[in-house]
Image (tube, rainbow, N blue to C red; front, side, top):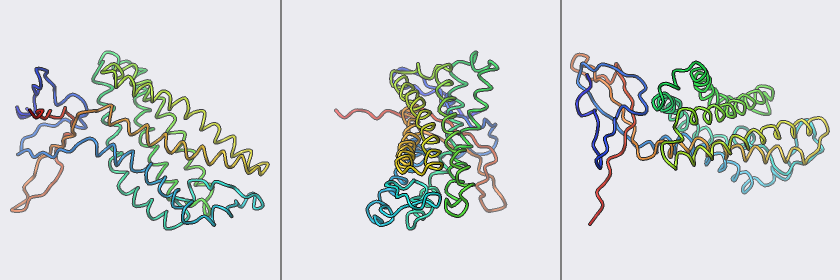
Length: 305
């Protein structure tokens, strides 16, 4: 049995179940229970806003402090063609000190991203259980969870594999990232629609419409990215490479914005971590023997008179 204080909260006459949205693992707690709670905004800022800000900071540093590299930038496949806009990969993975700053950003970005798929999964399966139990819904949800993990792994690979030293692996990693991101958007739009998540409030419907726009535009831009890079590779047209790079910049912004919408999908909530503290001799060991992570509505602060 869960402690009584983790039951329903009565706020302004409306009862909210704390077990409503994002339980990672339900457990029976036999030992003393300890709580850790923090705002879901941390997930939005570190899991979505930070990588976008960090990436554009690296790009801005390149244009401001390394203008000579920008003006003289060429590629090995077309050494006589000067490109006005170096791709993102050089700013975050090849040139320093930007690449070290980007590694620092990735260090703080990746841990919060682990939680994203679990929050959304709980929301998708909780609102309309009769729909969530259907076979097609479970299949889409299964693929959604995989793309949510493959996407950040692709970003890690893009960071690790140097574009100049191991171009083939870098290009493959970028392809994995962009394909996973597009499928992630597609599955999210489908699941939010059929699960009823977009019907929770007018704001949820607006975020769903924005995600649908990002999906349509993102697919078009991704195709443009592939075509423009192919044109540059075969015919060494500098303008085509410039289009490819600009599309990259836009897709980075799209990715950051898409995932930042978790802040609105789970508005006015906190995330709470509950775990047993196991005693080992006289020492306390913070072993996550039983872990339960939920989100619940924030307590509303009384308005000052």
